[in-house]
Each structure stands twice: as C-alpha cells, then as structure tokens.
Image (cartoon, rainbow, N blue to C red):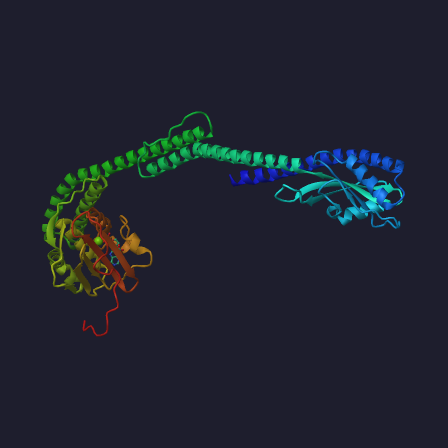
Length: 501
Ligand SMILES: Nc1ncnc2c1ncn2[C@@H]1O[C@H](COP(=O)(O)OP(=O)(O)O)[C@@H](O)[C@H]1O
Ligand SMILES: [Mg+2]
C-alpha cells in the first residue's frame, strides 16, 4: 500500500504539473495573438489621430483609444505607460482601462519591452483584484507602441487566469478523490491476495506442527491446480512417506522386541536344566582333580551371570514393550535405602569399602514402587563399591516439598568427561575388558534409568577422573507429578572447614 501511495503521488503530481502547463500555454497562445492584433489596431489609431497639439490633448486621445480596445468584461485590462528609455520631453501619464495600473507591471517586463521594440513579452504576475480574497495570477503581454510626441510607450494586456486556476482546483480534487479510491482498491486487492496465500501457508504450518507432535495421519487440503495446491500435494506426499517409514521402523522394532523377549524366555528352560546339572557338579567338586574342580567353580559363576543377564534382558524387553507397571505404596525413602545398604554390607566388606549413610532425621515419605527403587539403589551402591577401589561410599537422603532424593557418592575411578551421559546406555562400560569379569551385566543403569522415568523421576550421574562419582535419584512425592528441584546437589559441594566430618 505504501508503495502504491508513493507511485500514485509521483504520477499524480507529474500529470497535474503537465495539465497546468498546458492550460497556461494555450491561454498564452490565445492572449498573445489577441494582443498583437489589438496593438496593431491601437498603433494605427495613434498614427491617424489629429489630437497632437499638446500632451493633454494626446492624453485624452490615448484614453479614448485604450477604452476602445479594453474588453467590456473583466477578462482583460490594458495599461499604457511611458518606457524608462524614453527621452522625449512630451510626457503623458499612464492610462489604464480598469483597476490594474502601471504599478502592477513588473520592472523586468518593462525593461524587456523597452529593449526589444518589435517582439511581444510575456510574464505571469500576481495581482490583487477587487472581489478576490487573494492575489490572482495574471498573464501580462507587453509590447512597444510608438506614440506621436510622447514616443516610446509600453502597452500591456493583463489577462487574469481565474478560469485556469479554478479548472486546476477541480482537477486536483478529482486526482485526490481518485487517488484515495485507488489506494483503497490496492489495499483491498492486497488483503484478498495475502489472505489467499497466507491461509494455506498457515494451514501447512499447523499441519506440520501436528505431524511433529506425532499425529501422522494429519494431511493438508489440496484444492484447485495452483502453486498452493501443488504445495499441499507435495506436503501430503512427504507426510505419507514419513508415515510409511515410521510404520516400518515401528514394525521392525516391534519384531526385534518380540525376538529378544522370545529368545530370553526360550533360554530360560534349558538354563534351568543346565543350572541344576551345574549345581550337582559344583557340589561334588571335591571328588575331582584340581583343574576340573576349578572349571566347576568357573561354570557356577558364569551360570550366575547368565541368569542375571537373562533376567535383565527380560526386564529391558518389558520396558520396551511398554509393559512395565508401577506398584506404588507410600514409603519412607530412608527405610528403603537402609534395607539396600544392609544387603550390600557383605560385598562392601569384601571390597574393603565402608558405607556411611547420613540420615536427615526427618521422614522422607513418598509414594513409589519400593521393589523398583530398591533395584535402582542396589545397582547404584553395588556400582559404587565395585568402582570405588575400596574407598568409602557416602549415601545421603533428603526431602523437600515436592521430591525426595538419594545421592550415592564414591571416591573411586570416577567418570571421564562425557561419560556421565553414556553410563545409562545399554551394555556401555568404561572398560569393557575389566567390567565383563567383575559381575555387572552392563544393563543395570539402563534399567535404573527406565525405573526412574516410570516414576517421572530423575537419575543423573556426575564424575571426575580420580575424584570418584556421584549418582542422584530424585523421585516426586507422588508418581507422575513434576519435580521442580532436587533436595540434594548432584555434584559434591566443598565441605566447610568448621564441619567436623
Ligand atoms: N560409581 C561408578 N564409578 C565409575 N564408573 C561407573 C560407576 N557406576 C557405573 N559406572 C560405569 O558405568 C558402566 C555401566 O554401569 P551398569 O549399567 O551398572 O553396568 P555394569 O555395572 O554391569 O557394568 C560401568 O561399566 C562403569 O564403567
Ligand atoms: Mg551395575
């Protein structure tokens, strides 16, 4: 619209200028032709007059001649005035036909007329006329006249341009109202066109958002055969392709989940048999040669790991299938932690680690699934002991308005930068060679994270090489509610020196 207004303004003022120029030009042509013939007439009359005895008689003759050639209406005024270059001793006063007198004739024009006796001179001046509120632009045509006795005199015809002025006023009115109508039209057209384009684009954005939110069946309406319709068609084709691929991937992953779950189940039966046979061999190892007895012990250990791995695999496939359910009850987190710590004491003694449990002294009640939380904590504490290199393991429990938390901190090998995110990946181990012999299945933290998520809780890790690591489990007071902040810091805070511990 701004652009339209600018263009209209420029074109409009140019046209207005041209029309004005034309009007003045045609008036000028007409006026000069008329003035020329009138001047010839006046010149002839002056030459043929016999009132040349003195200036008074000449003045009277001049007045009658001017009165004759002046228009009857106020369309033309005539002024007769002595030129400044005139040196004759006979002087007649200026003769005027109406309200315009010699003072309205500009000096410039007078000089031009005096310098060039043969040619008409034209100029536009503003003159006050009776009955007009402001100055009226007038076309003044001047020429030299040769008077008897008085000699060089200028005769000036003054044509008021009122008609032209009012025509221009009407034209500018028309231009203005036409311009306003045009601008309104441009605005209307622009509005309609943008609506036509913007509405489908907005719709596309909306559909794209819904697709991104997982509503894969969402499609655009493709109407007509224009560019927007082809946009909608391509968009829909893209959505179709995406949906097909996602379906395929979903099917594939469902098949894989089924496979893992089936294999785990299938393995259970033979494993039970092998387990029984293995136990039999293990129990009677005293009767074997030392090398065979050692093999029997190894077999028993590996069978334990095999069973644990199978149990973990089944658990993971239950999570993947979305079959994991919470079995919640209101519990004090301090009790759950104490129970798990008790269970881990033996392992801690064997590894030489001392477990300290700092009790906040206030109940840390929350509603959660105690068996799942026990499993998470057991995994964290066993990890802390196994990777703690015999150094102390500190456990803290705390609660705030919306959440309860437990932090398990060890002072062992710690985690290298970037590893705190990877520890939760399935089968990820910092040192695969070592870890595969030290018990864990590599699925412990992955399962723990799923358990925390099931509670809408957080499980986070921090670690630094040589400084140990810290794992924090935060659970909402009731499952599914949002956690604003954890009551405990994940990173160990530097203890104040006054603190006796
Ligand atoms: N407290 C810890 N300190 C150092 N590294 C750890 C700690 N806890 C876990 N990790 C690293 O994370 C890996 C994955 O742990 P996890 O899922 O429990 O499996 P696993 O214990 O069977 O190895 C471990 O192998 C170890 O490298
Ligand atoms: Mg573990």
